[in-house]
Each structure stands twice: as structure tokens, then as C-alpha cells.
Length: 257
Picture 1: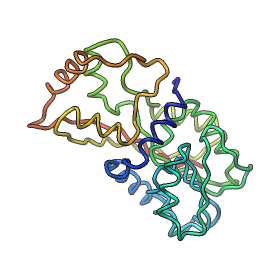
Picture 2: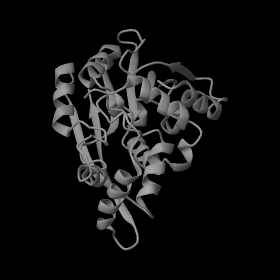
Picture 3: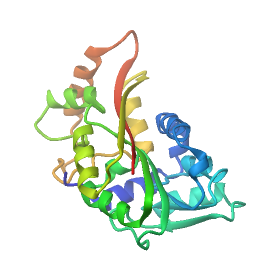
């Protein structure tokens, strides 16, 4: 995948203040991720990779001895810091998940909630995470799978040949990348979530507020015409369930050592 990293950073900087108001799915998945963690193992330094506005960081802060909250977008990191001002065992690091400025074998666990889908070279990311993990350290993360926003993707496909929805790695691709990085114990679970919206425009506004823009380098750089947008909405709304439209999100949850 060829992602525009500058566009990703810009999108999440802009979304930092609106993110918490609409990120229900992200909180739901984050809660499931927290529930899967053996809290007794949180004895060393851990990293919340792509911490966003800190939902997972807050959940981990009551158990871990030392946390590094890491995010590409400084404004997201500042929101997290404001929520955890009293937590002296939390450190904040503005950095790219694809260029981790951390020492080898210095981290006990790495956690990440719906953030790694914004990495282009995920095989390299997993190799670098393996580098910073102590022997026996764990990586626990959630990410979106290829069925995510399949309804929106299909509606746009009826309008033009541009790619309007980001690509996402499959479960098999993730497993292959993890094995190449040296992880041998890999547990993967996949679940489909469906959210309902009163209109296609409501869905698109939510995606904008959480910073989930189309960041593929090969996207159409021109402004989408009103006619193309109307056509896409007409196609999408043929799938109405009652008076609501549905958006599917494929969530892949992984625990690896």
C-alpha cells in the first residue's frame, strides 16, 4: 500500500478535538482489547502505539508500572497528556510507528488500538517492534481488515475508477508479516462490526471527525464533483435497512510473542 504519511498526520492533527465525540467503535474495540490483556504481565515498560486521544492509555495506566504513549500527531498526544496529567508513570513521545526511536529489548509489551492500518510498511513495523521487545515480550493490537467500509467502496466503484477507500491488510497477510518478523506464538481473531447512520453524509462526517480520510497516494487529487457525490449516495442508499444505512468494519485482533 502507498499511503501519504504527511496527509495521515495532518488528518489526525485536525481531528484531535472532535475525535472523542464520535469514536464509539474505537472505544468499543479498545475495551475488547483491554479485556483480552493479562494485567498480571504488565510489570515493565509498555508502549501504547498510536495512542490517539488516550482511551487505551487510560485503561492501561491503572495496571502498568511505566507507559510510553506514542503518536504521530502532536495534538492527539497533547489531548492524551491533558487527560493523564496526574499520572507520573506515563511518558509521551511524538514519533512515527514506522521509525521507533526506542532501544533494543527495552520494552515489555506493545499495545495498539486501531492504529497500525495507517502504516504502509507493516512488515517493517513488526520487525522493529520485535527489536524493541524484551525476550518473551508481547505485541497486542487491533486493526481494520479488508471488508471495512465495503458498502462505501462498492458505492464509489459504481461511480468512477478511483480508489476512494483505503486498503487494509488481511488476516493472512498480518500473520505472514508477524512470522517474518520472528513472532512464533500468534493468535488472531476477526469480528465484523456494523454501525448504522441516518444518511451517507452522516457516515462521511464521522469519518472526517476521526481523521479517517482517504490517504492513498493514488487517490483522485481533484475535488469530487457534486454529481459524483450524489451518484455515490444514490447507489449506497439502495442498501437502506429501514431508514438507516449500514457501514461494516472488519476488526482483526492479534496477540503475538
